[in-house]
Image (cartoon, rainbow, N blue to C red; front, side, top):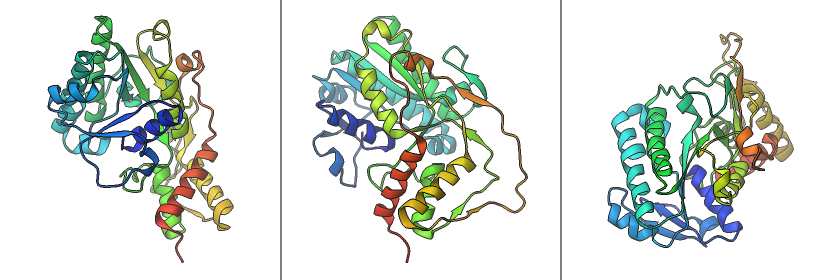
Length: 308
C-alpha cells in the first residue's frame, strides 16, 4: 500500500469511502496522501501476526513482493517474496475470514508480449519475476476452486503514472524515467530507436478498476483471471513525444527527443493485450495516456524542481 501501484490503489479506496489498512515492511517516507489509512508494520514470514493484522477486513489486495529488477538479480528472493510470503498472506486472509483476495500479478506470465493476448492464452513465463507470479497465481486459483476464498488474479500490463512520493523507487519505468529527465535535465534521451511496443495503462485507471473489482458480484468473477491494461499498444517513441508535449504545455520548453545515432529502425511485433473481460463488467480503461503523462510530469516538477 505504500508502493508504486499499491499507493495509488489505497488512495482510490480512501476516496471511495473505504476503511483502509496498509501493510508495510517499514517505510522511511511520509505518506500524506494516505494519512487517513491505518499503517500496519507486518512480518510477511509470520502467519499468526498477519492473521491478527488482517482480522476484520472484508477484502485483501495483495501487491507486496519482489519487483522485476530484484527478481532478475536474485531468483531465490523472487520465489521467497512472491510465492512463499504471498502464500503466508493468503493463508492469513483465509484464517481471518476474509471474503475476497485480489492478487496483482503481471502480464509477463504470458511470456513474450506479442500477438493477441487474452485470458485463454496459456502462460509461458520466462523471467523469474513472471515465473514466481504465476506460481503464486496457482495458490490463489486453488483456494478459489476449493471455495476457501474468492480468489482473483489481476494480470497487469505496464502501469504508467506518478508515484505518490518521490522515494517510491520506480523511476526506471520508461515514462517515469522520461518525465524525470525533463524535470532534472530538460532533456529526453532514449536508449533505442523507440519502436518497442507496450500496453501502457494509466495508474488512475488501475486504481479505479481495483475499486470496481472489489464491488463485483461473485457471479461476475468467472475463473478469477483478468487482464488489466489499456488494450492498445503504444511505442516508446510515442510516449516520449507525449512527454515532450507535456513539457511544452507545463514549462514552455519542448525538449528534443535524442536517440542513439546508430539506432536502426526496427519493426516491433504486433501486440494486442485484450481486456474484454473487465470491459464486459464495466471496468474498461478511460484515462487518456496524455493526461496521465501530464500529471506525471507535473509531479516530477514538484518532486525534483525545474533546472535553472
